[in-house]
Length: 591
Image (tube, rainbow, N blue to C red; front, top):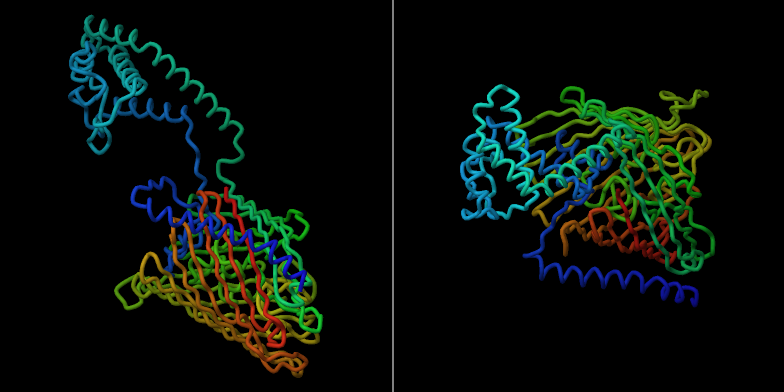
């Protein structure tokens, strides 16, 4: 008891402090919201609920196609100004010419340069407006901008002289240009120096760039977490865990994407203990950042996949690390974020367990139909096949004879606010044991990412097949409210005596996007992790309920902090076991 009290005192101030900070910032944001100028969008695109093919690609691709925002330097701005003014002077067909210097707010009619510049504009057309036929003359013009315009005029005059139209250039104009050059000599020199420096650096970057087709997208997660409750609380300590993913995204045509992802981490799920002090063999409460961890921060390629459109069809090919949610709409916006760092804390709340069956290498196609004119607006059919041991040439292994999971899903959109999906997954699980919800762990793997021991454990003596059915739906009544949920049924048929069993799972979530501040998300999720009753040799017939709440606070475009709590009742499907409560403070860096 004293150990539990001490851990509560250690962790509670952290979570409480962050919650108070977030609440205070949220109140301040509400007060100042009318005047706040939000200049940047979040890097993580939030998934729309529509499940049509075009929207699906927009939904799925941001998880692996996050944009890299380049920071502009002063030199970049100067170069842009020079290029803009020069372009305006050379493309009179597309830009409207400026006919009056009075548009320049810092050049007064009493200035000698006013008449001189007006003459240059009328005679040579070396300054033009913006493409929308405006010059934006109601803003102040800096001397550097004026010097950039003067530079464009000088280029225009030189062009006229070079093309044997020097008779248009009078001595008076040349004298005026000379006076302007003298007046703005410092600015012109500065501009040319900066442009030369920027061009030199640009050339150096181009000569030494990593690739013309590849960009790097990264994510790092820091998480402080602990679990409380009876023997489970005493058996665990507060942990500080991490996970890092570096994704090399390569495009050969501008429409396709090849993902080569490197990953490392040291995250482990908590060990839960029953009232007899015996460990509970369960995956309940597993958190998203704990999935795919290399445990000791060793680096490995955990995902290698290729997205490419083939006509109207979107194709997906995975060489390793493929999972069903890579290519199919999960209809769980704001909870499923596809990377484990921005959505729900737990693997259960992030997506239906039906998508956790199998994984590895394979392919998938998303085929659109009913693009319009029917009750079901943009809709699609997704089919996919993933083999857990596709690289193993041994007996009963490989792409076709080893463990696999084949998925078929119908995606329907009803209007713009409701999306529904009906999913079927057929799995084959060879003799040698393993788990149903293993993300492609394969034969004999101890990998399980969601659900109880009763729902996961497959026969070690003989092979099994599974047929799983699921319904997923998402409803967005307004831009500030999203409701989503799922139900799944799993029928496992073993090829040996007494190996058959059934499993169920269901959940419902409510998300409030932009709660307190643009980019924030408040999420509440409740349901039952996969469970199975009356299995021979397994004890426990209570439903393991899962309750979760989290608040993702966007500190900046690249940093978010997510405090959250997971409450597990009847762990191991036994009400005799004490409830477990997991508290987590997750910080996510994206770059």
